[in-house]
Length: 367
Image (cartoon, rainbow, N blue to C red; front, top):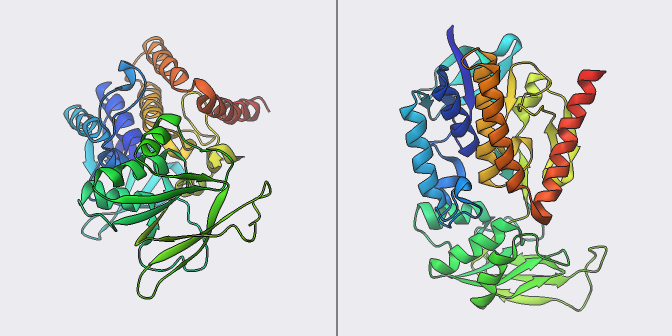
Protein backbone atom coordinates (compact mmCIF):
# COMPACT_ATOMS: atom_id res chain seq x y z
CA UNK A 1 0.00 0.00 0.00
CA UNK A 2 1.40 3.39 -1.03
CA UNK A 3 1.81 5.87 1.79
CA UNK A 4 1.51 9.65 1.57
CA UNK A 5 1.80 12.27 4.26
CA UNK A 6 -0.98 14.57 3.00
CA UNK A 7 -3.60 13.58 0.45
CA UNK A 8 -5.61 16.47 -1.01
CA UNK A 9 -8.88 15.53 -2.71
CA UNK A 10 -9.75 18.17 -5.29
CA UNK A 11 -7.48 20.31 -7.45
CA UNK A 12 -9.56 23.47 -7.43
CA UNK A 13 -8.54 26.75 -5.79
CA UNK A 14 -8.86 25.38 -2.24
CA UNK A 15 -7.10 22.09 -2.96
CA UNK A 16 -4.20 23.60 -4.87
CA UNK A 17 -3.72 26.27 -2.19
CA UNK A 18 -3.65 23.61 0.52
CA UNK A 19 -1.18 21.50 -1.43
CA UNK A 20 1.06 24.48 -2.17
CA UNK A 21 1.27 25.60 1.48
CA UNK A 22 1.86 22.09 2.84
CA UNK A 23 4.49 21.27 0.22
CA UNK A 24 6.18 24.62 0.81
CA UNK A 25 6.64 23.61 4.44
CA UNK A 26 8.25 20.32 3.43
CA UNK A 27 5.34 17.88 3.54
CA UNK A 28 4.93 15.11 0.99
CA UNK A 29 1.70 16.01 -0.81
CA UNK A 30 -0.38 14.19 -3.38
CA UNK A 31 -3.42 15.80 -5.03
CA UNK A 32 -6.11 13.76 -6.79
CA UNK A 33 -8.90 15.14 -8.95
CA UNK A 34 -11.51 13.46 -11.13
CA UNK A 35 -11.27 16.06 -13.90
CA UNK A 36 -8.98 16.19 -16.92
CA UNK A 37 -7.59 19.59 -15.97
CA UNK A 38 -6.65 21.06 -12.58
CA UNK A 39 -7.77 24.47 -11.37
CA UNK A 40 -11.46 23.89 -10.77
CA UNK A 41 -13.65 26.87 -11.57
CA UNK A 42 -10.77 29.33 -11.89
CA UNK A 43 -10.08 28.50 -15.52
CA UNK A 44 -13.65 29.44 -16.49
CA UNK A 45 -13.42 32.83 -14.79
CA UNK A 46 -12.34 35.51 -17.22
CA UNK A 47 -13.44 38.39 -14.97
CA UNK A 48 -11.11 40.24 -12.63
CA UNK A 49 -11.19 39.52 -8.91
CA UNK A 50 -12.23 42.12 -6.33
CA UNK A 51 -10.66 42.95 -3.00
CA UNK A 52 -7.14 44.02 -2.15
CA UNK A 53 -3.71 43.21 -3.52
CA UNK A 54 -3.54 40.34 -1.01
CA UNK A 55 -6.66 38.91 -2.66
CA UNK A 56 -5.24 39.32 -6.19
CA UNK A 57 -7.60 42.15 -7.06
CA UNK A 58 -7.49 43.08 -10.72
CA UNK A 59 -6.29 39.62 -11.77
CA UNK A 60 -8.47 37.38 -13.92
CA UNK A 61 -9.51 34.00 -12.57
CA UNK A 62 -7.74 31.92 -15.20
CA UNK A 63 -4.50 33.84 -14.57
CA UNK A 64 -4.79 33.10 -10.85
CA UNK A 65 -5.40 29.44 -11.67
CA UNK A 66 -2.31 29.23 -13.88
CA UNK A 67 -0.09 30.85 -11.25
CA UNK A 68 -1.50 28.68 -8.46
CA UNK A 69 -0.98 25.49 -10.47
CA UNK A 70 2.58 26.50 -11.39
CA UNK A 71 3.49 27.28 -7.78
CA UNK A 72 1.96 24.07 -6.48
CA UNK A 73 3.96 21.93 -8.90
CA UNK A 74 7.15 23.88 -8.22
CA UNK A 75 6.77 23.19 -4.50
CA UNK A 76 6.90 19.47 -5.26
CA UNK A 77 3.28 18.40 -4.86
CA UNK A 78 2.20 15.52 -7.11
CA UNK A 79 -1.06 16.01 -9.01
CA UNK A 80 -3.01 13.02 -10.37
CA UNK A 81 -5.89 13.87 -12.70
CA UNK A 82 -8.68 11.59 -13.96
CA UNK A 83 -8.49 10.00 -10.52
CA UNK A 84 -11.62 9.35 -8.47
CA UNK A 85 -11.77 8.75 -4.72
CA UNK A 86 -14.44 6.12 -4.17
CA UNK A 87 -14.02 5.53 -0.45
CA UNK A 88 -12.27 6.63 2.72
CA UNK A 89 -11.87 3.93 5.32
CA UNK A 90 -10.70 3.78 8.96
CA UNK A 91 -7.15 4.93 9.68
CA UNK A 92 -7.35 7.22 6.62
CA UNK A 93 -7.04 4.51 3.99
CA UNK A 94 -8.29 5.93 0.69
CA UNK A 95 -9.54 3.98 -2.30
CA UNK A 96 -8.92 5.56 -5.70
CA UNK A 97 -9.59 4.64 -9.32
CA UNK A 98 -6.97 6.00 -11.71
CA UNK A 99 -7.17 7.01 -15.37
CA UNK A 100 -6.40 3.48 -16.58
CA UNK A 101 -9.31 2.17 -14.46
CA UNK A 102 -6.98 0.48 -11.96
CA UNK A 103 -7.84 0.46 -8.27
CA UNK A 104 -5.38 1.54 -5.63
CA UNK A 105 -5.42 1.91 -1.85
CA UNK A 106 -3.49 4.79 -0.30
CA UNK A 107 -2.51 5.28 3.32
CA UNK A 108 -2.61 8.99 4.21
CA UNK A 109 -1.47 10.54 7.46
CA UNK A 110 -3.64 13.58 6.82
CA UNK A 111 -6.47 14.13 4.32
CA UNK A 112 -7.70 17.50 3.07
CA UNK A 113 -11.11 17.39 1.40
CA UNK A 114 -11.50 20.23 -1.11
CA UNK A 115 -14.27 18.74 -3.22
CA UNK A 116 -16.14 21.95 -4.02
CA UNK A 117 -19.85 22.19 -4.76
CA UNK A 118 -22.37 21.24 -7.43
CA UNK A 119 -24.99 23.45 -9.06
CA UNK A 120 -28.59 23.20 -7.93
CA UNK A 121 -31.24 22.13 -10.40
CA UNK A 122 -34.68 23.63 -10.95
CA UNK A 123 -37.69 21.56 -12.00
CA UNK A 124 -40.44 23.06 -14.16
CA UNK A 125 -42.53 21.89 -17.13
CA UNK A 126 -40.22 21.46 -20.11
CA UNK A 127 -37.01 21.52 -18.04
CA UNK A 128 -35.60 18.43 -19.80
CA UNK A 129 -35.54 20.06 -23.24
CA UNK A 130 -32.10 20.36 -24.89
CA UNK A 131 -30.77 23.87 -24.40
CA UNK A 132 -31.71 24.07 -20.73
CA UNK A 133 -28.56 23.85 -18.63
CA UNK A 134 -26.75 25.18 -15.61
CA UNK A 135 -25.06 28.56 -15.74
CA UNK A 136 -21.77 26.77 -15.06
CA UNK A 137 -22.26 24.67 -18.19
CA UNK A 138 -22.87 27.85 -20.20
CA UNK A 139 -19.71 29.37 -18.73
CA UNK A 140 -17.71 26.27 -19.66
CA UNK A 141 -19.03 26.30 -23.23
CA UNK A 142 -18.35 30.01 -23.71
CA UNK A 143 -15.05 30.51 -21.88
CA UNK A 144 -13.38 27.12 -22.32
CA UNK A 145 -14.75 25.76 -25.59
CA UNK A 146 -15.60 29.12 -27.21
CA UNK A 147 -19.10 27.93 -28.12
CA UNK A 148 -22.15 30.13 -27.56
CA UNK A 149 -25.04 27.78 -26.67
CA UNK A 150 -27.62 30.07 -28.30
CA UNK A 151 -28.03 33.61 -29.59
CA UNK A 152 -30.80 34.36 -27.09
CA UNK A 153 -30.56 33.23 -23.48
CA UNK A 154 -32.86 33.52 -20.46
CA UNK A 155 -30.99 33.53 -17.13
CA UNK A 156 -32.70 32.21 -13.99
CA UNK A 157 -31.11 33.44 -10.75
CA UNK A 158 -29.39 36.68 -9.76
CA UNK A 159 -26.54 35.49 -7.56
CA UNK A 160 -23.01 36.33 -8.61
CA UNK A 161 -22.90 33.31 -10.93
CA UNK A 162 -26.05 34.38 -12.78
CA UNK A 163 -24.91 37.99 -13.05
CA UNK A 164 -21.33 37.23 -14.12
CA UNK A 165 -22.28 34.55 -16.65
CA UNK A 166 -24.91 36.87 -18.12
CA UNK A 167 -22.21 39.47 -18.76
CA UNK A 168 -19.90 36.85 -20.26
CA UNK A 169 -22.68 35.78 -22.65
CA UNK A 170 -22.88 39.40 -23.79
CA UNK A 171 -19.10 39.51 -24.19
CA UNK A 172 -19.32 36.42 -26.41
CA UNK A 173 -21.83 38.13 -28.70
CA UNK A 174 -25.00 36.62 -27.30
CA UNK A 175 -28.16 38.29 -26.00
CA UNK A 176 -29.63 37.84 -22.54
CA UNK A 177 -33.34 38.47 -22.98
CA UNK A 178 -33.86 38.84 -19.24
CA UNK A 179 -32.52 37.78 -15.87
CA UNK A 180 -35.26 36.38 -13.65
CA UNK A 181 -35.12 36.35 -9.84
CA UNK A 182 -37.92 35.09 -7.55
CA UNK A 183 -36.67 37.07 -4.55
CA UNK A 184 -37.54 40.76 -4.16
CA UNK A 185 -33.90 41.79 -4.67
CA UNK A 186 -30.82 40.52 -6.47
CA UNK A 187 -28.64 38.01 -4.66
CA UNK A 188 -25.22 39.03 -6.01
CA UNK A 189 -23.05 42.12 -5.93
CA UNK A 190 -24.49 45.36 -7.27
CA UNK A 191 -21.46 46.01 -9.45
CA UNK A 192 -22.19 42.86 -11.47
CA UNK A 193 -25.89 43.74 -11.79
CA UNK A 194 -25.04 47.28 -12.89
CA UNK A 195 -22.87 46.01 -15.74
CA UNK A 196 -25.60 43.93 -17.34
CA UNK A 197 -28.24 46.60 -16.66
CA UNK A 198 -26.15 49.17 -18.52
CA UNK A 199 -25.92 46.69 -21.39
CA UNK A 200 -29.72 46.61 -21.59
CA UNK A 201 -30.51 43.34 -19.81
CA UNK A 202 -33.76 43.62 -17.79
CA UNK A 203 -33.47 42.22 -14.27
CA UNK A 204 -36.92 41.02 -13.26
CA UNK A 205 -37.22 40.44 -9.53
CA UNK A 206 -40.25 38.70 -8.01
CA UNK A 207 -40.49 36.56 -11.15
CA UNK A 208 -39.87 32.87 -11.74
CA UNK A 209 -40.03 30.54 -14.71
CA UNK A 210 -43.40 28.90 -15.30
CA UNK A 211 -42.53 26.59 -18.19
CA UNK A 212 -40.30 26.05 -21.21
CA UNK A 213 -41.47 24.84 -24.58
CA UNK A 214 -40.11 23.62 -27.89
CA UNK A 215 -40.12 20.63 -30.20
CA UNK A 216 -36.60 19.19 -30.44
CA UNK A 217 -35.01 21.84 -28.24
CA UNK A 218 -36.04 24.79 -26.12
CA UNK A 219 -37.61 27.53 -28.23
CA UNK A 220 -39.17 29.74 -25.59
CA UNK A 221 -40.11 30.24 -21.98
CA UNK A 222 -42.96 31.66 -19.94
CA UNK A 223 -42.19 33.49 -16.73
CA UNK A 224 -44.65 34.57 -14.06
CA UNK A 225 -44.63 37.00 -11.14
CA UNK A 226 -44.72 35.65 -7.57
CA UNK A 227 -46.09 37.11 -4.34
CA UNK A 228 -44.35 37.43 -0.97
CA UNK A 229 -44.90 33.70 -0.39
CA UNK A 230 -43.39 32.90 -3.80
CA UNK A 231 -46.75 31.74 -5.13
CA UNK A 232 -47.44 32.49 -8.84
CA UNK A 233 -49.73 35.41 -9.58
CA UNK A 234 -52.13 34.56 -12.41
CA UNK A 235 -52.30 36.97 -15.32
CA UNK A 236 -48.69 38.18 -14.97
CA UNK A 237 -47.15 35.78 -17.51
CA UNK A 238 -44.52 37.04 -19.96
CA UNK A 239 -43.13 35.20 -22.98
CA UNK A 240 -39.54 35.06 -24.26
CA UNK A 241 -38.23 33.44 -27.40
CA UNK A 242 -34.91 31.85 -26.45
CA UNK A 243 -32.65 28.99 -27.52
CA UNK A 244 -31.11 28.50 -24.08
CA UNK A 245 -32.26 28.76 -20.48
CA UNK A 246 -29.42 29.01 -17.96
CA UNK A 247 -30.09 27.98 -14.36
CA UNK A 248 -28.15 29.79 -11.63
CA UNK A 249 -30.07 28.85 -8.49
CA UNK A 250 -27.21 28.29 -6.09
CA UNK A 251 -24.74 25.57 -5.15
CA UNK A 252 -24.71 22.60 -2.79
CA UNK A 253 -21.44 21.53 -1.10
CA UNK A 254 -20.11 18.16 -2.26
CA UNK A 255 -19.65 16.66 1.20
CA UNK A 256 -20.25 12.96 0.53
CA UNK A 257 -16.66 11.96 1.31
CA UNK A 258 -16.80 13.82 4.62
CA UNK A 259 -19.94 11.84 5.43
CA UNK A 260 -18.17 8.58 4.56
CA UNK A 261 -15.42 9.54 7.00
CA UNK A 262 -17.96 9.89 9.79
CA UNK A 263 -17.60 13.65 10.18
CA UNK A 264 -20.26 15.42 12.23
CA UNK A 265 -22.43 17.81 10.19
CA UNK A 266 -24.50 20.89 10.85
CA UNK A 267 -27.17 22.61 8.75
CA UNK A 268 -26.46 26.15 7.52
CA UNK A 269 -28.89 27.15 4.72
CA UNK A 270 -27.02 30.36 3.85
CA UNK A 271 -23.89 28.38 3.06
CA UNK A 272 -25.54 25.65 1.02
CA UNK A 273 -27.02 23.11 3.44
CA UNK A 274 -25.41 20.27 5.40
CA UNK A 275 -21.76 21.03 6.19
CA UNK A 276 -19.00 19.24 8.10
CA UNK A 277 -18.21 20.93 11.41
CA UNK A 278 -14.59 22.09 11.58
CA UNK A 279 -12.16 23.94 13.80
CA UNK A 280 -10.24 27.17 13.16
CA UNK A 281 -7.57 24.91 11.60
CA UNK A 282 -10.22 23.47 9.21
CA UNK A 283 -9.98 20.07 10.93
CA UNK A 284 -13.25 18.15 11.14
CA UNK A 285 -14.53 16.13 14.08
CA UNK A 286 -12.56 13.16 12.70
CA UNK A 287 -8.88 13.65 13.62
CA UNK A 288 -6.62 14.06 10.61
CA UNK A 289 -9.45 14.94 8.20
CA UNK A 290 -9.50 18.58 7.09
CA UNK A 291 -11.87 20.50 4.81
CA UNK A 292 -11.44 23.64 2.72
CA UNK A 293 -13.39 25.61 0.13
CA UNK A 294 -17.02 25.15 -0.83
CA UNK A 295 -17.35 21.86 1.05
CA UNK A 296 -17.28 24.01 4.21
CA UNK A 297 -19.93 26.37 2.82
CA UNK A 298 -20.27 28.14 -0.52
CA UNK A 299 -18.29 31.39 -0.72
CA UNK A 300 -15.97 33.10 -3.20
CA UNK A 301 -12.83 31.57 -4.77
CA UNK A 302 -10.66 34.00 -2.78
CA UNK A 303 -12.02 32.63 0.50
CA UNK A 304 -11.64 29.05 -0.74
CA UNK A 305 -7.95 29.65 -1.43
CA UNK A 306 -7.42 31.11 2.04
CA UNK A 307 -9.18 28.17 3.69
CA UNK A 308 -6.98 25.86 1.64
CA UNK A 309 -3.90 27.64 2.94
CA UNK A 310 -5.17 27.24 6.51
CA UNK A 311 -5.74 23.51 6.07
CA UNK A 312 -2.35 23.02 4.39
CA UNK A 313 -0.48 24.88 7.12
CA UNK A 314 -2.37 23.08 9.90
CA UNK A 315 -1.82 19.62 8.39
CA UNK A 316 1.89 20.24 7.82
CA UNK A 317 2.28 21.60 11.37
CA UNK A 318 0.51 18.55 12.82
CA UNK A 319 3.10 16.38 11.05
CA UNK A 320 5.95 18.39 12.56
CA UNK A 321 7.11 20.21 9.43
CA UNK A 322 6.87 23.61 11.09
CA UNK A 323 6.98 24.80 14.67
CA UNK A 324 3.73 25.60 16.44
CA UNK A 325 4.88 29.20 16.91
CA UNK A 326 5.57 29.75 13.21
CA UNK A 327 2.39 27.91 12.18
CA UNK A 328 0.28 30.06 14.50
CA UNK A 329 1.79 33.20 13.00
CA UNK A 330 1.09 31.98 9.46
CA UNK A 331 -2.47 31.00 10.35
CA UNK A 332 -3.12 34.36 11.99
CA UNK A 333 -2.08 36.11 8.78
CA UNK A 334 -4.46 33.93 6.77
CA UNK A 335 -7.31 34.57 9.20
CA UNK A 336 -6.71 38.30 8.91
CA UNK A 337 -7.20 38.06 5.14
CA UNK A 338 -10.30 35.87 5.54
CA UNK A 339 -11.87 38.33 7.96
CA UNK A 340 -11.22 41.13 5.47
CA UNK A 341 -12.96 39.13 2.74
CA UNK A 342 -15.96 38.61 5.01
CA UNK A 343 -16.68 42.26 5.63
CA UNK A 344 -19.81 43.98 4.34
CA UNK A 345 -23.37 42.67 4.25
CA UNK A 346 -22.75 39.47 2.30
CA UNK A 347 -19.52 38.73 4.13
CA UNK A 348 -21.14 39.29 7.50
CA UNK A 349 -23.69 36.57 6.81
CA UNK A 350 -20.88 34.16 6.01
CA UNK A 351 -18.82 35.25 9.01
CA UNK A 352 -21.74 34.52 11.34
CA UNK A 353 -22.51 31.20 9.65
CA UNK A 354 -18.90 30.01 9.72
CA UNK A 355 -18.67 31.11 13.34
CA UNK A 356 -21.59 28.83 14.12
CA UNK A 357 -19.80 25.86 12.51
CA UNK A 358 -16.65 26.43 14.57
CA UNK A 359 -18.59 27.11 17.78
CA UNK A 360 -20.34 23.78 17.40
CA UNK A 361 -16.93 22.13 17.08
CA UNK A 362 -15.80 23.82 20.33
CA UNK A 363 -18.95 22.64 22.09
CA UNK A 364 -18.35 19.05 20.96
CA UNK A 365 -14.78 19.16 22.31
CA UNK A 366 -15.92 20.58 25.66
CA UNK A 367 -18.64 17.96 26.01
